[in-house]
Image (cartoon, rainbow, N blue to C red; front, top):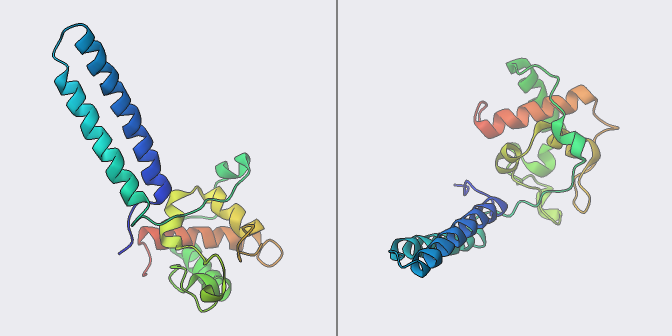
Length: 179
């Protein structure tokens, strides 16, 4: 089973917990200064502090690290023009199996036959895809990912084919198609 939250996601959660712990600590200090009952606030700050430790422990032990390459700001807002139909998903599957499965594996787990020769290894797309906008995925498929073995497909695949692959990957990650 894949851990459901990435390292970056757990680090973001920990930052919010730190902010909450600071708020409760400040409330405890202000309440103590005013002579009120401050222990509840201090206990809350301590509990949040403990959750921060757990969050960071999970982040750096069991959560997968999914580095996110830079994407132009406007690419994030690009919407998939292909219809969300079974035909589009099937067309995306055909393109993916013909071009991408060699590295990403037939189910997008990053375990294709070429994967073991690449450094860094291809990402698990079932985990990576739900964390990004369709425009980001399209950008990476189009332009490749610097510093990895991910090539640019803009000269090989048409825009429609690349968007179909995005539809297929989203369906694969959400469980709409057989894994």
